[in-house]
Image (cartoon, chains in turn red, blue):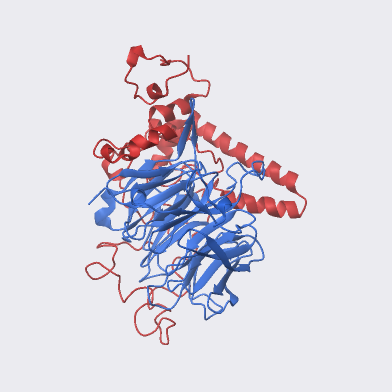
Length: 247
Length: 339
């Protein structure tokens, strides 16, 4: 008997009368993560359900859109802190692209760092390897990188309590506002550099006599931002974050 | 009209003489229905799109390696592009002349014209060398330089808002009144690698998409921060397995402010973030979607199909066609449900 897709999403109205199977606590052959994805209702409906969702009459009900809205956003509203459970759920929601960093919380830093490689970077790498006859070595390199990522993720999954606690100590304080020091990390591979532009802080190089941008004010804007009550369009209390505070 | 260009299933028109390898970015002129596309075949091509969806190739120029990004000046007279050859190049549509306008120490991944309307062109380039540079096209040296926290992965500008998303989930926001000092640097609201950003039509925030089939809606003004939220999309269930696809592109409708997401699951979907409604999905367009763009008045939507390396090297079997499709935008696609 085929498994009932609606039941897996918590939406089967037939209940016990359903002709398809409603698996109770049968261990999934695919592991915990797959069934968790489904139970959270995060699935995109198959095409014959699209018409229902897009009909105007669907209007004010809990739209498929709002049901996708993550419970973790915005961070200011949720109880502060990363729970082992939240970490476990987050890291088990695996995208198809494997060579990625991972951050367990909305607007907060990575817990798995230095593992971000984009498909374009990989493609360039293979292209360059092909032209120097090193495809095999390149393939091995990426297999190696993938298995390193898998090890890291397995380690996190086996020790969620510890990882959650350590990460909390470093980054978590319940404050959702972007912090100037919010991204300092010991294991980051990136160098933040010397802060603001090479031209120095005040007195923009853009505006010093004979500016490329014409008389007075930056050509970027119409002398100040396009809207807002004088001052930056980005609102009062705008912070200017400088790099290099936590190298 | 070449009947071979019309896709019966989707009702969309295929571009004439598409690129011969994956398209990295498509962009419409703000002033006319000219479409530019940068490609892994090293070329940047420009077509004129007619009202009936047919297209005529107009011009092309080359990089010395795959081209990764392209953009139009606000006045519609110039197309700039960046690529793996670490160079930014530009064609003046009027004269047909091309020149190099930018230089980085690694591939230029993102390029945008960031000048305000009626100002002289300024190009921003962001690269895998973790640099953001500004160029005024008249000088060989950049007029501004910013160190990014990581390699640039995506960038969008709707003057005065410029957003650069980098590797390791960093997002750097600029107010173009102050182009070399970040307005703020934040971590992505999403959990995995960033793929794309798109500024709101109203310029008060941006949408960010990742490899995890999720989009984050972010506001820049402190007073609006509470409105932020994220939602899942482009996740496909097959039996008990969930396939979590990448959101490769987000494009905002220039008038309505609604937006489209597009994915390597082969679909594009229109959304209204204010009403939190899915507006109109377009599934099964024939392949992974790599990049999307609206034209200047929002009546046309272009999407590029091709292999996005989501399955790595082994997945590059050549079975996915590289092309660009043109979709005639309908009210059902983009009209907001909110007032």
